[in-house]
Length: 241
Ligand code: NDP
Picture 1 (cartoon, protein in one colour):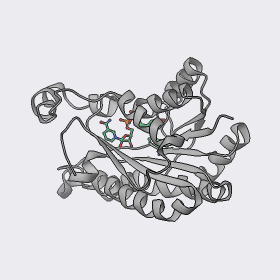
Picture 2 (cartoon, helix red, strand yellow):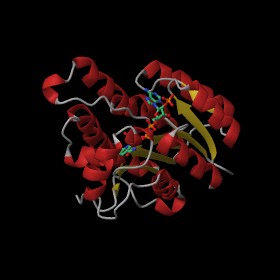
Picture 3 (cartoon, helix red, strand yellow):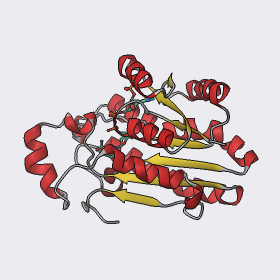
């Protein structure tokens, strides 16, 4: 029987690669997105993966969205918390809105998404929660106090829930990507990418979304049942914890 996997922000970038990799591994996949309807519909048409629109920063929207996914596909057994945004600014210029939007999406979004599926996972004695954090949550990053705080919070959330889920067959892990060649990173001026960012990556290139997706497929599998509370750093050697 194929398991049901739900990927937030699963229609673009790293999330799209995760959705496709899970589908190819035999999962019934649902991909959530926030508002980029055109990209999402094109993704759905191209891959056959159903897409569902809601904002992970709203608890009620998550409850309703998950109910719609479960009505269509069945209970969510694998949850990939991938949706994320940046609102970069040096701290002295950062607005409360920039802080709140990032915390509400990148950190509170994990509560909003995981809480509604948690009881079902406990009841069925199986679950996989995989949180996409970031290298910048591990090391901090100038201009990203909001993002780094949220992503570091994701790691604390991961380790705590791992302890709560362990006896119930639920594993909770995090992946910390380094720089991956998605729209989020391609938005950085090419000169900055080539002269300042890529030279800091020992393997000498950006990562590919599929390289993160393969980590997710492994963590979702039965083979990874003894791995919980872990963080996989996938950053081309840029930072060691
Ligand atoms: P993209 O900007 O390419 O895609 C983001 C996805 O998240 C989109 O599908 C978007 O939906 C969705 N999304 C954004 N906000 C919300 C929301 N409030 N509710 C629901 N969905 C939302 O991002 P990446 O693929 O680059 O990043 C994916 C994850 O990986 C993020 O958590 C990011 O922080 C993390 N990461 C990325 C790195 C990188 O180098 N790219 C490095 C380290 C971590 P829509 O299309 O509708 O806007």
